[in-house]
Amino acid sequence: MPVQLNMSHPILSPPKKQHQHGDYSQSEVTLANRNNGTLLETLQYDVTPIGAHYLLNHFDVPYVDGTSDWQISISGEVNRSLTTTLDELVKQATQQDLTRTRRVTLECAGNGRANLKPRWPSQPWQVEAVGTSDWLGMPLKNLLQQASLSDRAQEVVFYGADKGIDGGNIHHFARSLSIKDAMHEDVMLVWQMNGQLLLPQHGYPLRLIVPGWYGMASVKWLNKIEVIDHAFTGHQQTGTYVYRTNSDDNGTPVTTIRVKSLLIPPGIPDWSSRKRLVQPGLVALTGRAWSGSGVPIVKVEWCCDDQWHTASLETSDNKYAWSKWAADWQATVGKHTLSCRATDAEGKTQPLTPPWDIAGFGNNAVQQVEVWCEEF
Ligand SMILES: Nc1nc2c(c(=O)[nH]1)N[C@H]1C(S)=C(S)[C@@H](COP(=O)(O)O)O[C@H]1N2
Ligand SMILES: [Mo]
Image (cartoon, rainbow, N blue to C red; front, side):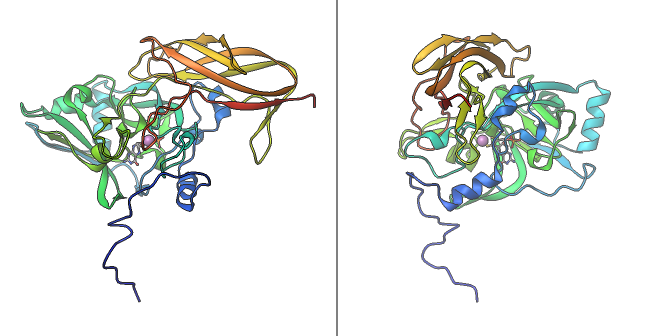
């Protein structure tokens, strides 16, 4: 017998979320099992191996049986609404020489959320929600030009095929961009990642890639584009992905990636605690640094026990991809804390403590890695 729900519905009228302290809840563990982070040791690779790229799926991965039936439509404030299959789109892009590959670092806006105290009950990222891929596709701009925007066009809304519920709100995952951002030559419709078709969990068969922005803008399983004459107020646009200092705050939208860096934890790990052990002597430290909007990294510093030093930096040829940094550490017996800090060409740098946001968005505070140094 189904249970009749009258007063409060746990899915459609869920209780208000509360910040958490201490142990992770069952639902946070469930989310963490579905949405893997990258393995920090793979920061060695310029391009993240596909299976090691972080994953953030709000709902279920849609089942797609081949690309020939996948349709993408553009409607709303356009002079020529159009619907095309993905096969047709790819064919046209190839014939018109529009296909491009761009190396882009994606980071989830919630990366670092679990390091805030108290923390917001959501995907409990610590530092690992970042990765870099070679994305192949075509500029979105060309498709928008083909549809020809009307004079009233104000925003472009991108819909994913995935559907679910958040805060009692049933919706397809959808995000918008202003006309100016959508027409940016680097925003892409993408069908390949690192030389192969997208994996189901990364948006197969078609996704958007918005370089320099936090990951939520890069809508996966893209099948509908709607041009509208007003500001989009969908749940993923205004109900979340907004920086708020308290729940009464209207907030400001989360957009481009804040300057950040990571260090590959050196030495060898203890299996269950992941604590690190290194030998005394020379230890090669390395990691990655990136910022949003294609702004280059100009400096990386590293720190051992409150002593800051300048690291060497390999600048990237790809403006939206992370840079590699390296430093030599003379490890001495004892327990140490290692950190790194990036500065970009606009002079922006990482804070030592997490910036406060109720949902833990945009946490670009420096990472801290504890290391035990001992002869072994
Ligand atoms: N349709 C759809 N697109 C989506 C999402 C989603 O849940 N559904 N998640 C977004 C978020 S929050 C991030 S961080 C990136 C993650 O992309 P990846 O899983 O390929 O790393 O996809 C974005 N695009
Ligand atoms: Mo995300």
